[in-house]
Each structure stands twice: as C-alpha cells, then as structure tokens.
Length: 253
Image 1 (spheres, helix red, strand yellow):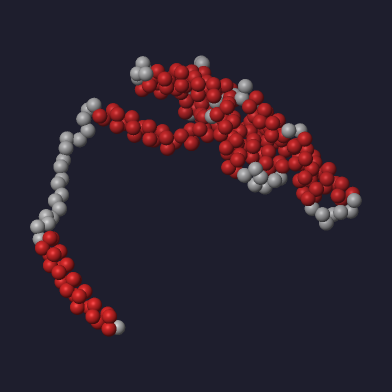
Image 2: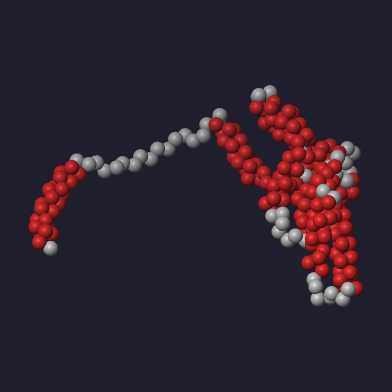
C-alpha cells in the first residue's frame, strides 16, 4: 500500500504531461473532407462489355439448373438413387457420393457434346473469329442435337401441341424451349423404367426370404435382417455397380 501511495503522484504527473502533449499535438490536426464527384457514367464503348458481364454472372447462377435440365445428370442420379433404394441400405452410399458419381458420369457421357461446343463456339469466340450471338447459336446446337436424340417423337409432339405451334417439318423447326421440357419428361420416364428393372431381382429376394421365414415358423424375425445381407452379397457377386454404370452409359447411345 505504501508503495502504491508513493507511486500515485508520479503517475498523476505523467498523465498530466501526456495530456498536455496530446492537446498540443492534436491542435493542428485537420478534419477529414468528403468529396462527391459525379461523372458522365458509362461510355458507349463500355456498355456492351458491362452487359456481357451481367449476362455471364446470370448464366453462372443458372448453371446448376442448366446442367440438370439439358444433360444426362437427371437420368443418372435417379437411377443411382433407385439402386440404393432397391438395396435397402438407407443412406449408404451417402448422397454426396451418389451426386459426385453422377457428375463424373455426366461429364463422361456429355464429353462429345462439350467438345463440339468448345471447337465450334468457344475457341472461335475467344480468338475473335465470330461474334457473341453466333457463338451462342453454335454452342446451343450440339446440346439441341443431344436432346433431340434422347427425346421421342411422342414427347416432342406433346409439347408442340401444348405450345400451340404449327406442325414442324424438321427438327430444326422445333424451338429450344419446346425441346428442353420434352427432353426432361423423357429422361424421367427412362430413369423410372430403368429403376423398375433394377428393383425386380431385389423384390424377388425379399419375397423368397419372407416366404421361407414364414414356412419355418420364424414370423417374429424381420425379413430385412436376412434379405439385406443376401441382396448386398448378390449385388457384389454380379459386379452391380459396374453393371448399373454400363447400363446407364449405354442408354445414351
């Protein structure tokens, strides 16, 4: 306590000197100024570039939806999900694994289409050989051809009828906004058809095991306890993932 009492006058003197120094140093300080300048805005040369940047950002935000709508991603992911449901393994493989496998299979199946887009549209545009509009038109063409190959005549006719368009004389006469929903409906139908075919052997296994347990009087034992290992064993023995992957890829040719 005595030491603190002796130190207090010295601390007070140091504080007073510091206050005087701060006041003397702060006196000549200038207040900050804010300037508001109004320029002429975007020039005529910068406006098209700005519009292209905004369009590019909008396209990037819609890219996931475009990948699902105009590529093979939808069919692949649905078939893989049906396979997991048929096995009855709940969340194994996880959703992230299925989506990742679907993305890589989509890149594999769509590689010829993306190669055509790169050669016919992207590279000439980057080399300034063609304009933006011509590049966009050439980029859409390979994707349209892919969707038209996958969509059936009945699916295209349905959406042509719903859009109240005149009967097209050639595939090029069908607008893209008609081709996309027809392609999507066809993808859902083919994915559910493949999923049904995958379910059949596993349903047979469930029925056989349930009947066997009932005939043995083991009605209190859940059939899934026996059927799940049997289905996994059968799936592994027949190289199930290879068979499913091959079926998916070959369905696009």
